[in-house]
Amino acid sequence: MLNQVELKNFGPLVNLTWRGIGPINLVIGGNGSGKTFLLKALYSAMRTIEEYRRGDDQKSAAEILAEKLYWTFQPDIIGDLVTKGSDGPLACTVEFDQHKFFYSFGKDTTKQISLLENDVPARSSNSIFLPAKEVLSLHQIILKSREQDKVFGFDDTYLDLARALRQQPTKGRNFKGFAESRQKVERILGGRVQFDDASGRWQFKKGNQKFPVGVTAEGVKKIAILDTLLGNRFLDQQSIVFIDEPESALHPTAVYQFLDIVAILASAGIQFFLASHSYFVVKKLCLIAQKQGLSIPVISAQGNEWVSANLREGMPENTIINESIRLYKEEVELAFQ
Image 1 (tube, rainbow, N blue to C red):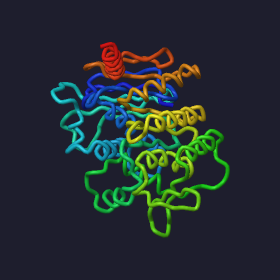
Image 2: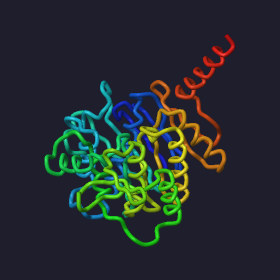
Image 3: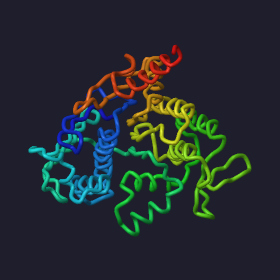
């Protein structure tokens, strides 16, 4: 697993240190606080580690990383990722199973990263990033935009996910926790999302009926993406999944059910990083942590600082929780008027 991370002068993340990372981890904060930036920084590091050690790419780790940062964040030059007005360089340190991956570069860097240290062993498992927007209805558009047209628009989190979804389902017994979660998904959705080879499109199959995925609810498509990655074995028991705004397009009940699935998969070995500004997400994960005695680290943006806590010990101090409490108090005051 990822054990800890330290970022300096990385866009909006001027100084962030997060230790004691666990199987499920939560990032909370308001819009523009850097939640998604943090997830993308971690994802870029993990994908570089995975692609370099497999030997599929003849590029150096520094070349792979520069390309991954460029297509994930899509700046004019990667030096633009350095915090504006900062005198120091961008620096990222990720510890994975007690092994270190570190890199640094300045604001004038274009494509070459000169300082990189990597002692993380070869890794066969995959990391994946699930963006806030679902990709099934955009699947072919994403692939054409990036693989044929090679233009900005859809970043590497979308491209990597589209390619992962393209893998064919694998028959045979799946891991116990995976099979259980897939059964839960089917109960939630009332069916399964499948790729139709004949039409080259995704469909939602409910009983003997099939519907184009374009007319299927956003929430259904979002949950189905995770199910598909379990079914085609892109994800295994050592995978890392980054989820941006799991609450997006989901009813609160579906959010709760989705997070129960996350908890099952975490117990099976997958590590999760979630970024959210939803009270429902924070509260549900807090209940999971306390009921199961599970450590769920949370890091929250409070002004220019990042504060760490653990949901096993209760709800953290944060503007999301404070605003929910304020609304509740306002409702109580109205009731007594």
